[in-house]
Length: 439
Ligand code: PLP
Image (cartoon, rainbow, N blue to C red; front, side, top):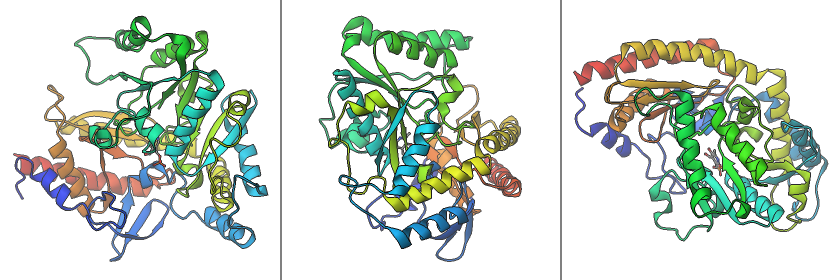
């Protein structure tokens, strides 16, 4: 089949489901009936390997028996009680465990929510309350969710904000380092310095540092295309924050819980954050999120400004405790490192053969594969990426794209080596077919 012009994107859009019950954009008319581990089965019985990992919400794998059993047991005891009034042993136990997971020896506290988005709204609230300052610094390309604070902190999609403004005020966005597209012969250090100058520009021109409550950062940007900035860049920002009483908050919703090869992606940079937002995989996709923060910061807000009826729901908390067991028992961060290295090797071999694979970024079992017109120009090729993911889907892979042209590789961390091999057999076929049709 010949693919011309933007036929790939057209096909891609034609196959997005416009009958989704909530009006949410879905890919490919896929209606999922059941799932296990790294595989999902659709209503017609067709099986797929899930390279999306339910958008990095399924690090422990679909329907892990320990998660399912923990939830069933909890349902028999207590399904829900308004979190604004009373708590329950399951949620208390989870909160205790989460405070111990924070990468630092200070005393931490936890505030539960139900989505990654509300956790990021929480970050803004806690930081403003604790510092008495209003400004938040976040990053271009960042995605933090779709509640008002989260969407205001994000900066990745003009269409997301077009109809809903004005957004939450006093959020300043600075560029995020790009190690793929840079000036000729620039070293990593020079790139870091250039982006640090961008970071400092607001402070050097119009923004008093003592009016800034926090920096909110995805230590590895997820939706922007799995982008890890240089260590010295993040470390310099952290040092600047410490020197100026600015809190350092990390959004670990996409990259946390073993995804990047560490429990938290900020650990790659040796930094102890003041606030952490977590969600998604924290409860294997059940609606649970949490802000984990240093106790004095968390205490500053008081009790009523960040509470939800169903926050820390006991069934979700039971799932989450099971998730934490599994991450430890199955050594998922370590597995993410070794399987990530294996997957990276496979992608690098493919990159050497195909001129349209511009960049292979892989941090743990966590990759962004840039599809470009050619390796020299590095021009993003959204159309080619659309064709590739559609072909992969037809052959049994759930694969989506980020930022228009980047293949998103975030399978459940429990994926087996045999399944990974199957993935690369299919991808090789897909890339070959695509290459041949292109010529
Ligand atoms: N932050 C990051 C980094 C994310 O990737 C996401 C979701 O994709 C969110 C926040 C929002 O989480 P939720 O969709 O659970 O509100």
